[in-house]
Structures are given as structure tokens and as C-alpha cells.
Amino acid sequence: GATTGNLCGLAAARHAVLLGTVRPSGRVPHAGVLQSDHEVSARGAYPALAAWLAAAATELAPLTLGELNFHSLDGGGQVELTLRVSDFRPIAATAPSGPAP
Image 1 (cartoon, one colour):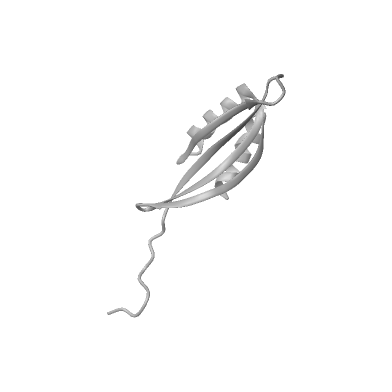
Image 2: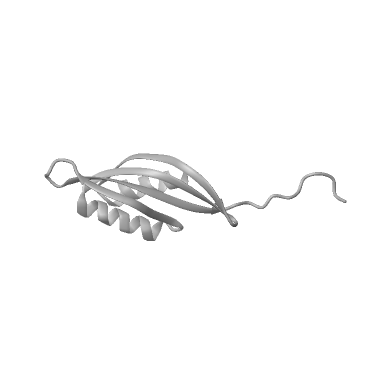
């Protein structure tokens, strides 16, 4: 989807971040918008991951980042992170079906 493509492009284009998995984890309708959640994993050096997250938070609005976890992979500076990403899209209004009165 658009979220996956945007995250991959941002990770590869300007940051030394290897995006792992991006898995849909649910959709929740709210008043007029659909929230789509994704579980994301990525790895790289901590400064690169931090820069990638900062860029994603500002450039991919209305994307929100949450439930962020970091852990060291090898003690040599490589870090893996997992996070939840949510995007919000307007729900298209549908016209009532059936014959007009």
C-alpha cells in the first residue's frame, strides 16, 4: 500500500535503514476516516534509524508512529526496531442505493 511504499522509499533513498517487514495489523473506522495500522520492523545504526523516524513523522503525515521498541543486534552499533504505524484516510461517502423517491 501507500504506507509501505512511502516507508520503503524514505528508508532506502535518504537513510541507511533496511526496512524489514511491514504487516497490516488492522483497520478501524472513525468518524469520517479509516485508520489502518501496520507493524513495521527495520534495522540500521541508531542515528540512521532516529533520522528515518524523524523524517517519517514529518514527511508522511497523516502518518503516526507509536509503540516503538529498539534492541541491539550485535553490540557493534546495529539496532533493530519494531513499531506500529497508523495512517488515516477519509472514508468515501457512498450514495444510497435503490430507486429515487
